[in-house]
Structure formats: C-alpha cells, structure tokens
Length: 312
Ligand SMILES: CC/C=C\C/C=C\CCCC/C=C/C(=O)SCCNC(=O)CCNC(=O)[C@H](O)C(C)(C)COP(=O)(O)OP(=O)(O)OC[C@H]1O[C@@H](n2cnc3c(N)ncnc32)[C@H](O)[C@@H]1OP(=O)(O)O
View 1: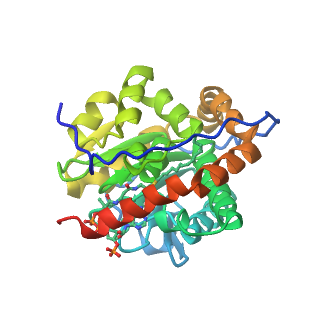
View 2: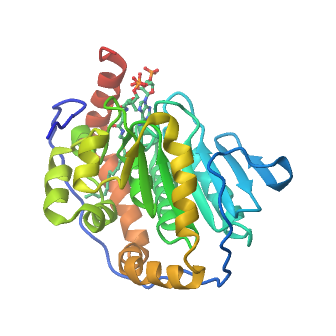
View 3: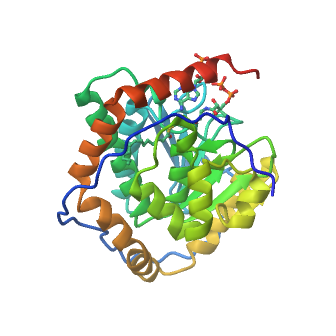
C-alpha cells in the first residue's frame, strides 16, 4: 500500500494528562419524513434555493429537497482558523434550526484542497486565552458535526490532512475525489503534536483499532485508493463527479425515516460524543498547556518553516 507523509520530522514532546469527568447533553430528535427524488446535479431551480454566506462559509440550501451544500472558503488552503470555525458554527446552527433542511453536503470552495486542517497560526505564538478560545471552537465544530440530526456527507474534493480529515470523519459518509495527488489522514505526529483522544476515538470508530494505531503513530496521509481500502473514505469517484455523487448518495440516505435514522445515529455516536462533553473543560486546559510548551511551539515553528520552504 502506497503511503505518503509530508516529511519525516520528529521532535520531542510531553503530553498532558486527562481531566475529570462531567455530564453533557446530546441529540434532539425530529420526526419529519420526506422521500422526494433528488436531482443528479446541483442545478436546482432558483425558486427553491436559499443561499446565504459569511466570509469563509458559503451555504446553498435546496429547500424543495431539504439539502444544503456548505462550502469552506478560506484561501489559500482552507485552514480551519478561529474565524472560519466561528462562522461554521453560526451557519450550522442556522441549518439545524431550518426545519426544511435534512441533509448537508460539506465540501470546499477550493478545487484542490478540502481543508489543510487546523490553522497552525492559531496554535503558534498566541496567548493562553487565544488557545483556549480556539480549542473550544474546534471542539464545538466537531460536536456539531458528529452529533447532528441532519445527514452529513463529506464531498472531499481535495487534500484533507489532520483537522480536515476530522471534519470528514465526523460526517456520516465520505466521498473523495479519486486523484492520487490528494491525501487524507490524521498526520499530527508529523508536526510533533498529538491527536487528542476524541480525534482518535472518531478514527477508531471508523477504521478500527489496529489501523488507527498504525495511521496515528506514523501520521499517515493516504491517497484516495488506500483511504478507501482501510475504510477512511466510503467511496472514491472522478473529480468532476464528487458533488453529483454526494447528491445521489444523499437521496438514498433521505429515504430512511428521519426519526429512525437519528435514533440509530445517537445510539452509535452518543458514547463517543459524551466522552468529550464530560471532560470538555479539562480537554481545553490540556490543549492550552500542551500547545504552550516551548518544545511544541518550536515544532510548530519548524513545521511552518518547512511548509514555506519546501519544493512545490
Ligand atoms: C495529549 C494531547 C492533548 C491535547 C492535544 C494537544 C494538541 C494538539 C492537537 C492539535 C490537532 C491538530 C490538528 C491539525 O489540523 S494541525 C494542521 C495540520 N495540517 C497539515 O499538516 C497540512 C499542512 N499543509 C499542507 O500540507 C499543504 O499546505 C496542503 C494543504 C497540501 C496544500 O499544499 P499547497 O497547495 O502546495 O499549498 P502550500 O503548502 O504552499 O500552502 C500555502 C500557504 O498556506 C500555509 N498553510 C498550509 N497549511 C496551513 C495550515 N494548516 N495552517 C496555516 N497555514 C497553512 C502555507 O504555510 C503557505 O503559506 P505561505 O505563507 O508560504 O503562502
């Protein structure tokens, strides 16, 4: 199996411990059923569309079919900055509150990059208050995606390392563009940082324990065909078919009565989401103390330098 890594960088790091548990909440359940046929392309009639957008998030809701397409737009690489994460949550809540919206296709406005993952500049050279706010926003986006009552399909139209991979993992179904130049995976160790337990839990739930151990320790980034083999993505399709495939897969998912699908999703995902909810504040403090360490800041500095100076 061909595996690709950005670089073989390894630096020393120290890991913080895990904090105390506290209780949390989970999904609400709606019971609407609608079994309309979906179009095979994004060409929805103007009357049934309701687009809205912010600086970094574009949303197009097809009200007659109950499906929204949400595009990340943060050039040049769609990094998940604090601003993007904040706008994401606002847009997501708007969709959650829209009774006509039953499914979301999550994709990128950029042709080659789904998302470069968390914005490293939000984790480098800032103060503790900034790190805490940033991490809370990362948690919030994952919880929103992972526990959503809506069907969430990731249309992965480009590379998707680290936080980008996490957003895909939190979706219900992943479709990736079959271009061997693109990769997906949790490559945190290559940056000298550690994927937190809930990234790991989401990965283990998706590809199993042994494959996760291997992928996480080595920070593996998988080309689409290999990602499909290990179950990191569910389907690979030609680049120009990603959106249309997402729409037709969505139409299949929406044939299932919402209440039954939602209760099943809750049954499958609640223990994993609750694990974070019960120790959310401790997880923020872990992140802040970990990321503030001189050795970790040095690793991030080196990685940013490597990204800027590497040959393209
Ligand atoms: C015990 C543990 C307890 C608690 C947890 C503690 C801590 C840590 C957990 C943190 C989890 C972290 C998750 C992450 O997501 S980290 C981010 C990882 N991302 C990556 O490694 C991807 C890096 N980027 C790339 O590989 C390439 O940029 C990419 C996406 C393939 C695109 O390539 P290309 O089109 O050639 O573009 P460039 O590389 O030239 O990039 C253009 C420009 O963007 C800058 N950039 C790239 N990625 C990021 C990023 N993630 N954040 C910020 N900036 C980024 C890059 O440096 C270039 O900048 P320039 O100034 O040169 O234009």
